[in-house]
Length: 387
Ligand SMILES: *Cc1c(COP(=O)(O)O)cnc(C)c1O
Image (cartoon, rainbow, N blue to C red; front, side, top):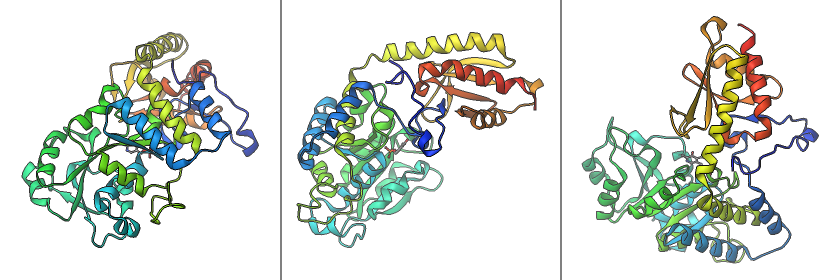
């Protein structure tokens, strides 16, 4: 299985004057995130055809996810960003309904969100929608004792973006957990894209993290889906803070603004199950086979350097496992990587690829197989005209 659906569709956007594009960038929210497999799509469509009590649907799918990954508890949320806001909020208020209701005002709540200075990243913005106050720990680098000194009863949690774990000048998650727990403070982990290898998903919980946030876009779930898992009491608070029971429950909570429909909740849960049971070796073999075929064609038809590489979720080029073609324009063409990226984005059909250093990455994970030929044609065309 490559991208779960293997043929593209072109008609639906014409009504709005839009042309579909060939997404050779990978999974990006601005390009629509993921797409659902036929099986998940069918289940979402069934969910559309019947009503269900949303509080029950959220409770039951949460149980199912917790069971799948071996966690105490879990909750579907509309993406990792919403998950971060809800998770931090839960750490601020605990189960005090009055404190929950007043968020993002935080009088009487634990207010501080600690982050290591080397962990500065853009989704902090979403965590702060809870009303927490950001406290950056450490100047250029952060030491365990910097964290120890910042801890106290005013601290709601430490937020740890785990894709930055082990970065020089930062304290690793396992030490952060030990230090924070000694002071009775929770650790919230952003693991949005750490869903492969699939063992990683439960790993952060086993390391002692209190709440862990994932985005469904990285496991072929809905662009507007995700989940949080972790400690039972904190997941209960996340549930009390989310959109369910705003109509029927005691508190008017800010999580009401993060609403989901039935189809999104069902699709997130079933996409995760599919991801955990998928033949991932077959998935990687598919990218490699297509890359080999496209590479040999490009070498015959165009000037430049063509390689098979891995384009990582944090936008680096590494050798393995292959999921991408890497094209470097020949010096004689006068084209830079950015020129090539822009030419491809502007032409028809628009091909979206990512310039990295001297070359451009074409990630095949999000290219439908019936678009491989047009992708090659467009690259050949873009390289043929010197600057
Ligand atoms: C995409 C992403 C998010 C946000 O996830 P959504 O599900 O799109 O809200 C958060 N953190 C990281 C590291 C991400 O890559």
